[in-house]
Image (cartoon, rainbow, N blue to C red; front, side, top):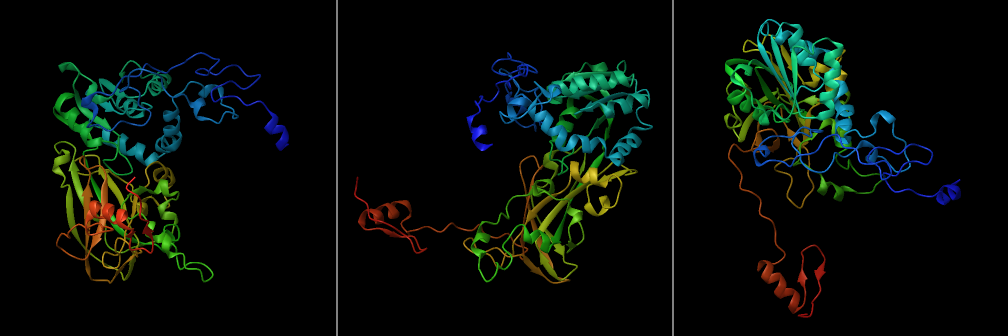
Length: 450
């Protein structure tokens, strides 16, 4: 069988399978593009671009799904010529999102009673579900903005099947590029552009822009606000997939631990598990990192760096920091939606919630026990003591980085060790004269001036 397989003629990626019709976009099937792309504009630089969006590009063609497959694999006819990134995004979280019934009811109840006879704007409308909710609840007009061509086509079909095409106008663009006439500006903005981190999909920047240009004064915004939280976690199970736990059969393998990443926050989906399916303990109460009022706040309303005192409630070890959020429908917080894994566990909609959003998870190390060249260790803590959670955000406040400290004062940044006190020139001089001791048992040999 192996010999037969090796003897088969190979085709280049994109060529049709013998006996099948050529694929659109393939070498023999002609070029099919979803939409002429447009070059990114400078004004887009401060806005997060949604996966699968093609509204911000120019020139060339969309990467078709069939070109992402192995040359010997089959592609369903319905997916030929489709945007590869969009298909990945829809299958990664969009199905789970639409099946999160608690999420859907959150937006239904938030819209209920505030959209009747009002003009509604839906940013990041996707399938059109929130727009159709607003239309069914009595909105006089709905403008839905979506950045992907194919998603617009699918939304058009959804509108027709639900007889809402007369009330809902679809715009293929990013909202920061859209201009509305004064009579088209909205009384109500609804936008579900929340990420695993609350502001992770550029939510705040798009809402701030909409407040300035697309909404009437005093417009209602849904969700009205939210809170990003974190909590310190003990979990030996996390340790088993992020460090070498005692070696194996007498072998010391701890050198590998020097590569443990305690600087990057990853999503639980990236780790490959649902957080509330593993054994863990919360070593403190949930820590509010910030609250945001979508009616008035900007990114600068959120402190970029903070050092938060945390009261430890249990004796043990801190292996990681877990990040989750909650948002509310109105200023009175009548309806609340959260990604807290303790709140999603056991709920009929909980699996969909954890699979579409999940949480952020960052490993952490003991600030007193670890040096740059050493082996990181979990942070030992005692119930009743105070430890400090140092938080650093990127410029738009969408991505935090966590670090633990036992000091209320800011530490000096660690200095990188050098191979020679003379720096680069000293190293070069040492090499030329007879080699340099690197301090780790290895030497650079002497070299000729050539």
